[in-house]
Image (tube, rainbow, N blue to C red; front, side):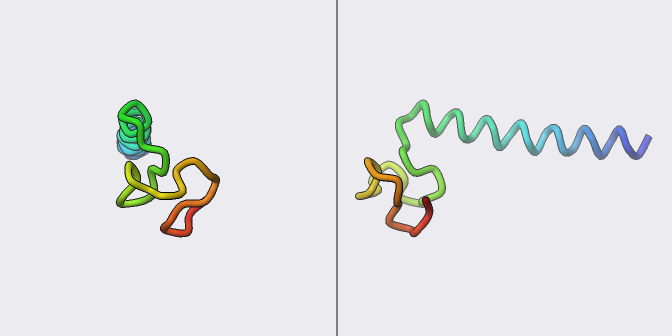
Length: 53
C-alpha cells in the first residue's frame, strides 16, 4: 500500500512539472529556468542571462 501511495505522489509531482513546462512553452517562454524567462536577452541563443543553458 505504501508503494502505491509513493508512486501516486511521484506521478502527481512529475505531472505538475510537465504541466508547468508545457504551459510555459505555449505562452512563448524561451528560457523556462529563468525568473525573467519571457524577457531573457539571450532567448534566441542557447545561453540564458541566468547562466543556464
